[in-house]
Image (cartoon, rainbow, N blue to C red; front, side, top):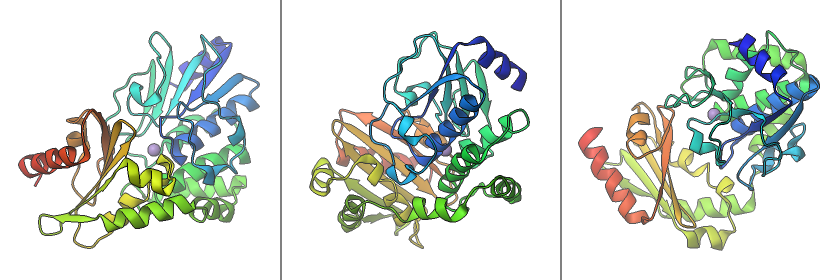
Length: 311
Ligand SMILES: [Mn+2]
C-alpha cells in the first residue's frame, strides 16, 4: 500500500490533508504530522479543518497556524485523518480520491486507499507505522504524532495501550520530542469556560441502574452562560466515567440545533450500539449526532435501548 500511496502523492499536483469535524488533538496532530512530511518532501499541500473551533492547547504544534477552514484546491488528493466515516470530514467529497488514515473500529472504508488499524490507540500511530519506513520523521512531525498519541491514549491510560506503544514512544523521543512541553500544553492549558461548564455539568449528574450508568445533559443555555465551545466539553465524560460504580457514561450536548451524544464504557463494547444510532467510534469511546430532537427524549431512547440490548 505504501507504494500506491507514493504513486498517488507523485501523480497529484496538490494535496489536501483533512481533520474530522469538532477536531481533537489526534486528528490535528496526525494531519499536521502528515502535512509536515509532505511539505518537507516539497509537495503543494494544504491542511483544512471544516470546524472553526480548534483545541488551542495544541497551538504549539509546528504549522498549527496554517490550518484553514476552506479547501483551496479543487482536484487535490485528499488525505483524511482520524475520521471513521466520510460525513465526519464535513466537506462534499464525491468523486474525490481519498486516502483514509484511521483507527476507528467502525471505519466504513470510504477511501480509495484505506489505511485503517483499529488495534492502535491513535490515528497518529497508524500514520507513523505506515510512513516511518519510507519517509524521514523529523522532530516537527514526531512532535505532532506524539501529541496525538498522548491525547488519544489519555496519557497512556486507555485500553489499547500496550508495550508496542512504548517502543514507538522511545523512537519519537530519540528524534527529539520534548515530552514535558507536550504534556504541559495538553494537560495544563484548560480554558476558564471549560472549568465553569464542568462545574455546571457535574451539578446535573444523574445515576441510573444502581449507579452503573451515569448521564449528563448539557443544554444550549449552559453553553451560552459559560461561553464554552465544543472543544471545552470533551473532558466531562471522562470525569463521570471515572466514578467507581459506573460502567457506562453518557454525555448529551445541545450544539445549536444538533445534539451530540458521547459514550464511554470501562468494558462493554458500545461501538455497534452507537452505530445503530447512525454514529460509531471505538469500542469503549463512541457516540453519534442527531438533529431535530431534544435532550430528554434522546436520553430516554438510549436508556431504553441499553436496557433491552446491552445490560
Ligand atoms: Mn483518534
